[in-house]
Length: 346
Image 1: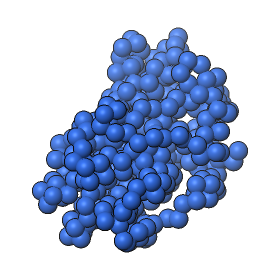
Image 2: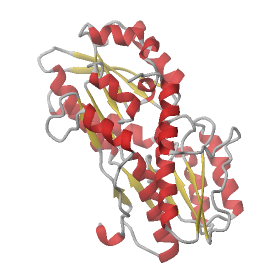
Image 3: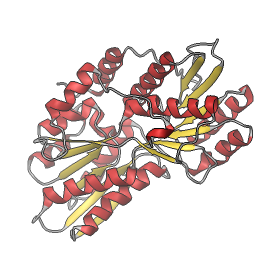
C-alpha cells in the first residue's frame, strides 16, 4: 500500500463517497434545507481524513432519521479564532443543535453563548468540560494514551533510559493533553527510566508535523523514542521522513502513535511504528448526531461522557489488538456496523 498522504486521502474519500462540504472560507453546504431539525457539525480542520469519515457517519445517521438536515463544516486550518466566529455565526442563524470538536479553552465562551441561546451543544473527539456543553461523545483519551504507553513500555523493556519526544497538535486541545498524560502515567506505573525531552506542536497540519518530527530528531541525537498523539506525520509518504525512517530501521528509535487511519497501517506492517491506538471516527458522527438529535427532539438525558471506546492495531495482533490485515479490511469495506446509542443503553 502506498503511504502517499494525498493519494491515500483521495482514495479514502472516494471509498466512502464523500462530497466535501467545507469550502475555503470555512462555510459548509446544507445537505437538506427542508429538515425540521437543522444541525451543524464543526470539525477541527479540513485536511484530516478522520473528519471526513466522521462526516460520513453523521450523514448516514441523518439518512435514517426523518426531518433532519445537517451542515458539516470546519475552519480551513485548526484555528480557534475562526472556530469561534463560526459558532457565533450559527448562533445567529438559529440552528437547533451543534456538534463540535473543541480546539481548546479559547472556544469555551462561544460554546456557552450557544447554550445560553437555547442551542444544545455536543462535543466529539475533543471535549470542553469547562463549558456548558451538554455531552461529549468519543473515546477516553487518557485511556488511549495509557494504552500507547503500555505498548511503548513493552517495546523498550531492558533498553535503558528513554529520551522521548512528543508530537502534539494544537496546543491546549484537551484530548491531546489527556493522551499525553495517559502515556506518561503508563511509563510511570511501569517504572520506566525516562525523560520527556520536548513536546513539539504540529498544529494539526501535515506539513508542520513532518517538519516538527524531522527537525526534532535532527536537533537532539539522544532522542530514542517518539509518541505521536495524533496521526499527522504518518499520513504522508515516508520519503518525507528520512531521518525517522533511518533511525527506526536501525533500531535507534521507538515510535508509537495515536489513531488508526488506513494510511498509518503500512507503517505498522513494516515495523516503523510499533502500534496504534485509534478512535471510532465513524462513530464521532454517527453517535454524535444520534445523541444530539435525541436531546433536541426527545429531551433525552445522556451522561456527560458517552465513551465510544478505542481500537488497537499491532503487527502481531496479540491480546485485544487487531493485525494490520484485519484492520485494513474494515477500511477496505468501510464496514463499522454501528447502531444508535440510546440513553437506556448506558
